[in-house]
Length: 195
Length: 93
Image 1 (cartoon, rainbow over the protein chains, first blue to last red):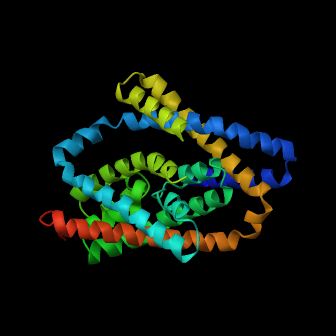
Image 2: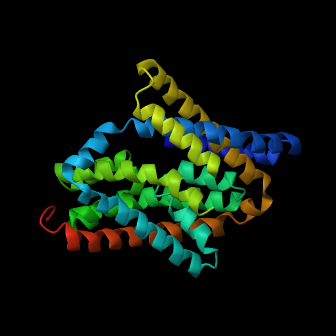
Image 3: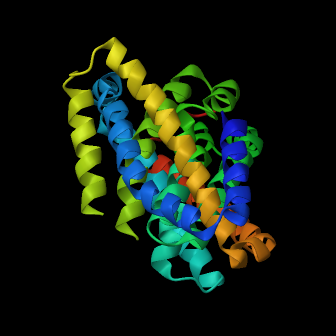
């Protein structure tokens, strides 16, 4: 899937360079309607996570500390980065509140009229996922199992769940999945808050 | 921004209430992939139209890497503190 996404992106970039101005301007305006359709569809998927909501009740609200920590820490990291490279704080926090969900965060910033921020957000969250694969074993070994969930953000429910589960235990894998779902719910809410 | 929350919430309700049958959900999954790919394509178009982004790509990539590193550091630090404070008993190595 991620290869197909990258291919779509590359095709788009080529299209942006080659297509006549009015064609690409049309695509720009059509995409805001498509974004609403995408979010509607994402919303349907989110509402279906009933087992996860039940699981949270069962395990206790305490486990929400993990995704809350992930989100708060990411926002803090985004703010620090924005200060370091002289970007507006809000933009920095919008970028880091992608929580690893690179496709949606990139799209949201681009649609908000900031294609540069969209490109940075897309790349930043791709890098976040890539780094997660590498450092999960280290975090599981040197800090604690909860920390191995932290870098994954929203990806803990799918792409990076395997590496977390392999390096921790099955109980942590369940927590990771729940944390990933909660982070996934947070992304489309948090990113627009900072735009 | 209001529209974003409106469609998200509407979709959430439909999913939560189980208003869609198996077939509808499969269709929703396919449509989601299609919209996602189209939007990523459109994102590429707005990048490609913008010569400035293309010229600055290495710089933007460097900024993105910084964002990734600090978001990960912040998340890990926050989860570490919270887990030491509140989740001590469980999850020891």
